[in-house]
Image (cartoon, rainbow, N blue to C red; front, side):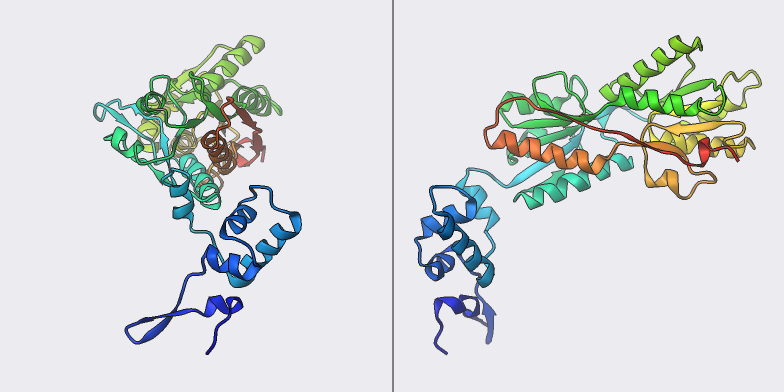
Length: 356
């Protein structure tokens, strides 16, 4: 069979007696469109001074013959590896050991990762999750950029990225001069507190596991302001860690006290809210009649699988991940200015605050 450029997709190579399609290249597109390889490349990348009609013709030809750009080659030509890294800024371990451990068992982080991974792939990058801080220097040397979620002030990965000149952005405010995307946690906490007291006066305790993250500090500040404005005494409960099994003994003991001074619990994490609902059930407390519960971070675990679904703030973590990737690629492309993006929060009202 005689093949013309238009039938480039039909090119075959032999492999153990069978014929396999050959990958369509930019040369095939250029030949079919009647332009040089350089012009075809500029037309498809949106660069260079290519006439509009020529550019559209190249795009149409590429679609017709089934051309897809070789992402690895494009990244190598740009001096990149095509790899991005996402990590969670670790919190100090408490009773179970020493050192630092990212909290990957919290759904919020996985949803951020999902949004970031898809956005990175669509922009020609592969994004990897960094599970530990071990050998970070070697790992980062093979990456084009770094995203750190809930950055602490002394995060070693951020320090290494800044030292080595690796582009870095954070999900959550950072204390340095890096771009970030975040929620307005102060306003979100204020709206959650207003909702708790909407139907009846409430004595609210704040349940948290750490105060190192900027979002927790904002939530704590908003809570203390609310206490001052309403004349309520602050009641702050602290779990030794973010997991349900770490939090449940603490909230169980607080709820079981005969002199308990609160009838509503505001938690900084979905896991703490989950633990609160479990403890209330074990103590035969009615939710929301005896105890209202609100989480300042939503997850599917709060809407399904509990005796009473829990009212929570939707932080839109998938969108946070998507924006973080866009900020990072902007830094890779030479947009040097620091950018700050704020994603609005919405309140998902559920059974834990609704009167029967």
